View (cartoon, rainbow, N blue to C red):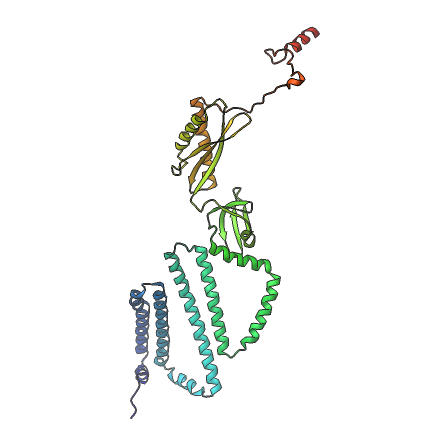
Length: 387
């Protein structure tokens, strides 16, 4: 006598419920058990082995496989419970031809590969997100491009596996894809160039969203970085969209990356002023400005001899540099230095010109003297005579 298998015992048990109430009760109990164990108990059991990203991904895949098995098993159990067991048995007996079995196997294999790739892609997103939380060097845009690239390769590999299951000639497809790639490459070389440059920008990280940059003469705040273009908002409220291939071959000045920005402002003092004294007064005035950081400290250097003054260059730093903070700091420094110079009697001269005649030509004479109304005395006398 043949011993009954566990599957046969389960079938006999499920087909033993003949009343509607019993079937509804078993159905409800089965759904509660599957949902409670598969979505409440299993995740808590697997949580303890998520010490690393790899273990976390593997445990997640095991969880999904277990949940899928529970769903399939509960579905088959419900079919037998509600009297569809003979129908399934009849269908399985009809599939006796080798070709039909092979086709069914290929279809099932394709479904398994597709859902496996889908599950891995879903967990891949969680793995990348977990990696981003633990890696400070990975930005949000790098996380997105890394995830999309990995998913693209994953589904491409899954497609190749499915084509292989169906005995598709991959050589012809690869040759056709190669010719198509050449045609597309010539037709859209600028777009492909921007695409490749976008990948380079994502991982070289010359700037990130929110940085104050200057790219090839265009200056503004970075608002968006895609694989095709970079968008800036300039200080007039205009959005400037620059293709990534143009970004990559132009000088890039990032004023926000360091977190500090040095600003230079020139001020002139009279030639009769001691430059060292003016330097001390200017440094003290700049140090009292709250818009300027204390470290690095402000500096003042005599820069050059101007037409009518000695030019001093004031250097000071601001943190978290933005255009409004820059101009606010410049305004505060100019006002503070002007007030300090006035209090110390240091003169900021107006532009002056000194006129002189060459000795070999006898110089020049100024005829008459200027009166109270600004006219020369000769012109005033001539005016009186005409009266």
